[in-house]
Length: 148
Length: 148
DNA sequence: TAGATTATATCGTAATACGATATATATGCA
DNA sequence: TGCATATATATCGTATTACGATATAATCTA
Image 1 (cartoon, rainbow over the protein chains, first blue to last red):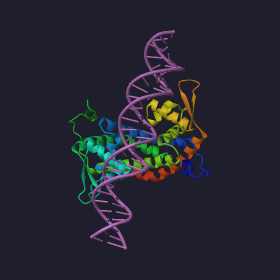
Image 2 (image 1 turned 180 degrees about the vertical axis):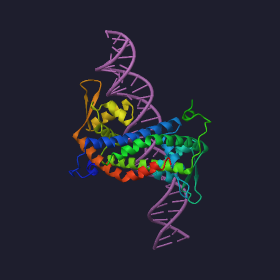
Image 3 (image 1 turned 90 degrees about the vertical axis):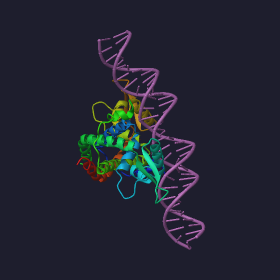
């Protein structure tokens, strides 16, 4: 089966869309990109690849009894476990994470932020909360225009 | 100046953040990723790289007197002009776009969706509008928790 | 009209997510 | 208990793609 055939069976009728509907979805995605571009730029200025910033945030924002592990990272970032393992390795290399084998389950690697990471993440998070206060109205508005 | 020094002057005090604030921002980013993951998966099933899907949407959602060009694409996708040129080339190759030199300004390349692109984009957009109807509450909620 | 500006294009490079695969540890059940 | 299976992490080669540097053509401006 071709990939195209998989999206929806060929020949299945799909309702026509007005150009306003395309414009509304495009506008929403544009707002999303604006935020993501801000975020990537901020991370870059702080010396972090965007995904490493997201990893720090996911770990710092992790709630639950168990401390976060490589698997936690994969689940939060929606990436494959082995991709999370590579990411964590790079971050240990960059002095952002400390990786220790869990005592309960020695397969599991516990991840803890270094002081450097704590400091960078704190500054980035403050900046993001400020920026989102600005962007939120446009984002909510664009969302609201979608399904009138 | 090191990249780190650029984020905010070294030594500038940054307020402490509660773990709830990290969790709230992390939750918002997680919702964003859920939507983006849905979108990338949907595009993939339809046989499109995610960025090509976004390009089609940006072009179809474009409003204004001038027809969209490579520069329009760059502006909407927040990428460099030469990156947009590469993207458009790949899409012409994939029979998604028709590229014609504008009559008024022959530097400018006008971009028009092919019937194949129209069809794929229509299906994808319907699916996205449906999915966003589902995800919107969680997204708005997460946004609301940010700056209480 | 010369020089500056704008729009698009090309090429080499780097970053990173993925598939395939491997290893270690843990768990379940005969 | 011991072995099969499952789970967690790691490694390696590959492919995609955005970028910087640079180039070319068309347009604008003084």
